[in-house]
Image (cartoon, rainbow, N blue to C red; front, top):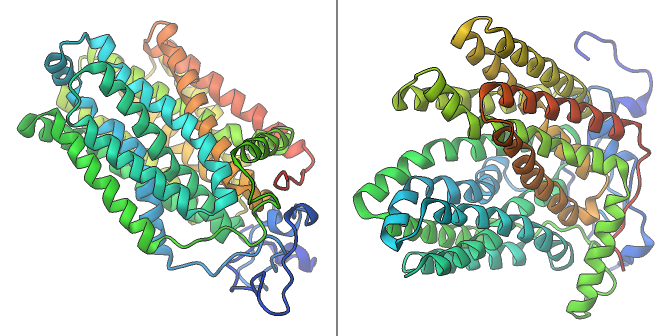
Length: 478
């Protein structure tokens, strides 16, 4: 901690796991390849940097990677952040760029507004399913092949969307878009875990959130202008081009980072074995209460954001009388809070362990949610009071998601793809389900505040489960 004296315990001072130089790779002369099911997943040295309640040391040797979780030397961080951030952001851009086109799509294809909204829903369903499928595939075949196939599917589906003659066909193609684009977020998390742990991983996750968070802020404006000039079909042409560009970038720039020995001993068997292996790995992960506790936190943090996004247009425009331009400005200002919170976290992880920041960030979010509820119920401060409380609440989430992902993946290096798939699926599924409850409760500012308080308190319980649970080693199922 700042101002504290160095720890007399040499192991406490060396708990930050830095990017390691490339060790002798399995299969090289004199380096026997271990079987994945014979090497236990490290649940101590590698994970301590993420989950220990000590500040990472600025000095001290790197903790050597155990056999079976060897990782290559990381590429340049800036290029990696841009590439992984773009891969993960494409999922949000796919929705946000298309949103302003919904009225045009309904008119052009002769569909109702509610039926046209299915083109949004099926993308989320496809992404959730795709993440669960891609995770085990990336653990077995490597990080590059599944994401390359995913972006190829996304590009082809986007191009076909641009010529879809009917709404049912467009809905089906949007589902394929979701399946393909899901590979980006899962692979991004797995690559970060392959190359980094502890504070370095949490810092890189925060940088990724910056890229992921900034891009969708401008996507609706760009999508609306594009649809206004060239029509809604042009939006899908642009998305197809984006998919091709990322596919080429993955083939040229994304390193293969899956640790040696991560694949199961049955890597040469068929689809049936792969499915059984994936199900067994997921079952083992879900039995790990520590992993589940950390994995639920990003979804609960996302539910606060989804609740804000879905309810705020009605609250701010219909109830408080803001114009469309004023609401757009406030939306951008609150976007600054979201991005700023993650960048504050990136600065703090150099001095505090990710688990320490979680123990501060989660209760802080709960307190700020309660403050928002009091402001809403009492009317204290009027609109200004509501906006200030909301701004700080949204910003506090930046201390949760990057650190929670880091802690969740810290003990599962050789199943990082499967673990990342569960984290992202929970993030989208839980975030969407909890966030939509506000609409069922009336869709007003009271419903928004109540749901946010519930999500924040649930996050406190989830963190408590995680920190009290005993670490469990989960090796790939053979």
